Length: 45
Image 1 (tube, helix red, strand yellow):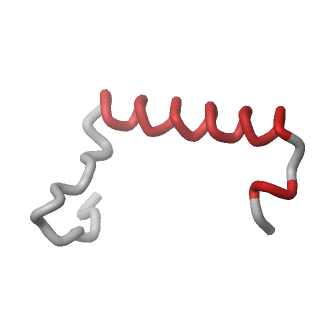
Image 2 (cartoon, rainbow, N blue to C red):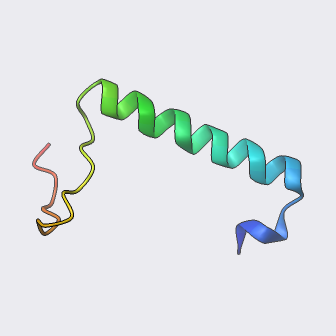
C-alpha cells in the first residue's frame, strides 16, 4: 500500500507523526543520521 492512496489530510498526519518521532529520537540520542561517507551500521541497542 502506498501513502498516496490515502487522503491528503491523512498523508500530512503520517508525515508529521514520523517527523516528530525522528526529532524526538535524535534529541534523546537514540537515532543518529548516517554520515554520508560512512556505511550504515546495525544499531547495537
